[in-house]
Structures are given as structure tokens and as C-alpha cells.
Image (cartoon, rainbow, N blue to C red; front, side, top):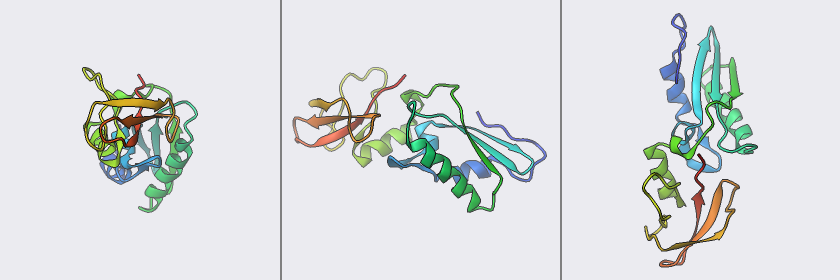
Length: 161
């Protein structure tokens, strides 16, 4: 949900456009909007409050994301910025947009399964003949898999509801 205070010179669509360039530091091809963590923008006078939700409890990327949000807005002379971590709603992988899933796939990370999917596809060759090597991949939110057809290892972004 995005809200705007009606009498401000700043507008939410401008803020959203700026924040669409802020990427997740662990998956630099996906924006915080497409990852589903950008939840709300509130403008009160000259103060812009951006509310984000963490993907996982204690996710270390949240500190970098907060700093990146402030930096992106300050580059557009928006200096009164507050970034709040909120816990409602609780983030789930269902919040990742179709564009975000495609970006993960093209980057070499298998996106989380969606309803109806049963097998994790290799992001290199699209084979479903994959096996989990480790419950943890390059970060705690990913598992390490290997494709049995092309033999390439890859990260799988774990489902989280």
C-alpha cells in the first residue's frame, strides 16, 4: 500500500521511481519493489518515510538496503528520509513479482517455487533434474543445488510463507 499526503510538493510516484533503482545487495538484479520488501511510502511535509519488511529475521542486507534508500533519495535532494523496518505484513516469497522471479532466473538463482510447481528448475538449462547439495547456499535465504543434467551448481531462493 502506498499513501501520499495531499498537500505536499513531493509525490509518491516520484519516490517510487527513485526507489525502483534500489537493488537487493545480495541479488543485485532485483529491486526492493520486485522483491516485495518495499511496503509503504508516507510523505509528511518534507519528511519521506519509507517502510520496508525484512525477508528473513536478522537479514544482514537490511542495513545496506536502508542506507541505499537514503542515498538514492538524497541524490535527488530529498534529505529528510526515515527508513522504518516493519514486521506487518510478514514477508513471503509470494510477494516477489513475476519480473523479480525472471531477474533471479536470468542471474543464475532459481526463484522460489510457486503454487503448482513441484520441482526446482536449473537456471542454466531449465532441467528439473536437480538435487539439493546443502540447505544453505551463498546466503541463509538460499539453498545450494546441482543440476544432474548440466552438472552446474546453483542457488535456490528458499520458499518462505
